[in-house]
Length: 244
Image 1 (cartoon, one colour):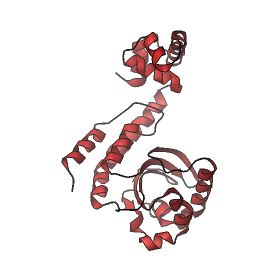
Image 2 (cartoon, helix red, strand yellow; image 1 turned 135 degrees about the horizontal axis):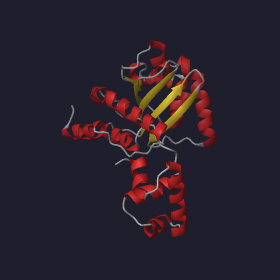
Image 3 (cartoon, rainbow, N blue to C red; image 1 turned 90 degrees about the vertical axis):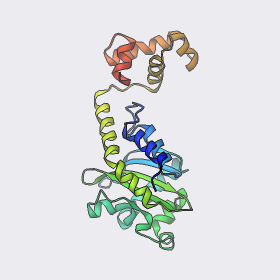
Image 4 (cartoon, rainbow, N blue to C red; image 1 turned 45 degrees about the vertical axis):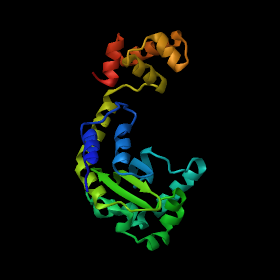
């Protein structure tokens, strides 16, 4: 059942909840709102390239717990099992990018626990339940929004229904970010922090105190920002990157 709170959260997403960080494939605020809308341990947005067996990008809210060498081993196992695991390769085998799927569409709990993809991948991350949404993609590359849970209740028809309604809006948000990445010069993390504080109305001295750097360093960051953006004022720089 869709509640008033669900509708409020969805409206925030549809309205384009947008942190304007061009480095993200989707605004972080949208992924956070999705995790609020469909409670789970992790929401991941990723572009999978099965032809090259790589993940072109991966953005997530929540932790699955694998780092460093363990993550590399997990990735190698995942791709080695990809084409024999319908949970993973279903969109490409069928060409169906619109049906929203869960692990339980393919396996009972008992069947899942007997699969190599569970023992070598899902189990290591503590994943028992998953919900997969695909966005329009090119052949061999699939854009996926994935929701992961551990033990407990499975994803519901309500969850699928909400995502079906949101699917075109999520794709529109992704396209907006792609356009922004093509048109916005890349700033360093520190330069972006400085610019965000400028946008909030802080002086150079206040920015220096907040970031624990000298006022001279703030000025130097602003010089670099102006040069990269080809602007001459603080207002123009903020508008160029963060919008009006």
